[in-house]
Image (cartoon, rainbow over all chains, first blue to last red):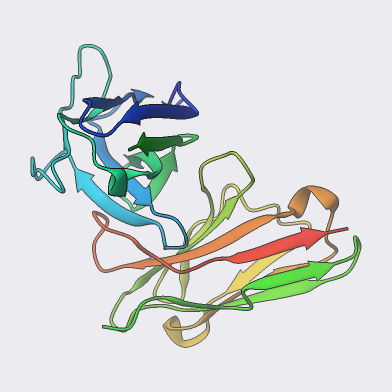
Length: 109
Length: 112
């Protein structure tokens, strides 16, 4: 069955430290994966998608089909990166997103 | 452009009462989604509309939840009767393509 797992509920780092938010997926088809972010008092919004291979706000994510992972990385965390991050899988190309449980990133000064 | 609008933002009801949520998507977005987000979990899709037709409602508890999208624009999600476990944030989203969904602010429902 299709599933997205984010093993960490909370990740706390200091400003300037590297960040890696983990995401693993289970899906029998060809996966399309996304990271969505929700800053405090703001709406859930798309951060990046693997098909575009962009770097948004310094974040990157590489799809590793062998390890079925799509970890989100940033070399130097900033305080404004503090937010909830959700990994999501597009099911059957039809628009249905399957979300992970989310990881709260806290960047301390 | 104006974002996805939802109302009300907060609602408190007693169990067995009914409640309705309203969503106005971004103009031109044919696809509309309703998600349920229980505290501590990621959003879960309840129903997906393409224009005014249902694409996926496999996770909608149809004995108590209903949704409609008249004229392919606004949508209403109803719960009748509500249970304690329905306490959650209900998110509406819309999209032009499957690759980016735009979310509304959500409605926080508390069932007592």
